[in-house]
Amino acid sequence: MNKIIKKSGFTLIELLVVVSLIGVLATLVLANLNAARQRGRDAQRKSDLRNIQTALRLYYNDFSKYPDNASSNIAGCGSAGTSLCVWGNSFEWGTDALGHQTYMSVLPGDPLPDAYYIYDRDDGDIDNYTLTACLENPSDEKGEESATCESGWEYVVRP
Image (tube, rainbow, N blue to C red; front, side, top):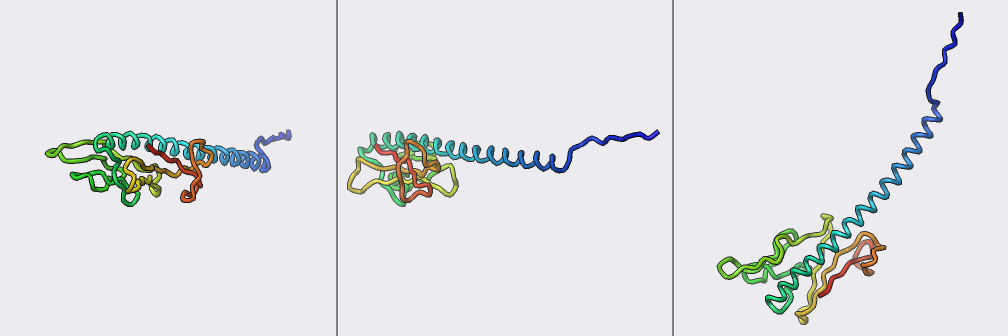
């Protein structure tokens, strides 16, 4: 009347192998996900700079010059067009009483909170400017080498 009881289950070794495989696969997925996020932010940066370029061209059409720069910002907002245009606020010139022109309802900022776009115009050359953003993906084919960006790669827009 001896009954043989057979216990079914996994051994400790089998469980450890499965857990380690899951860990390796999770690491690979997270690494690819981070790279996709970087490429997505870079695409957003390039799109933002092209949109800002269009707004700057509209400003140029109205005033026959590009706006001044101050501290890497566009200085072409406000009632006289000399106030700083703050990234994240509107790019507007004038007042309703004097004439009002909105070039961008929101002047976009960099997708990362600690990064920013750089606008630069030489005081002697009112027909040219550079608009720069640091890229996270150094293999982006539309980027240029940079000494100031952490990745060593930047995207530059010129008229």
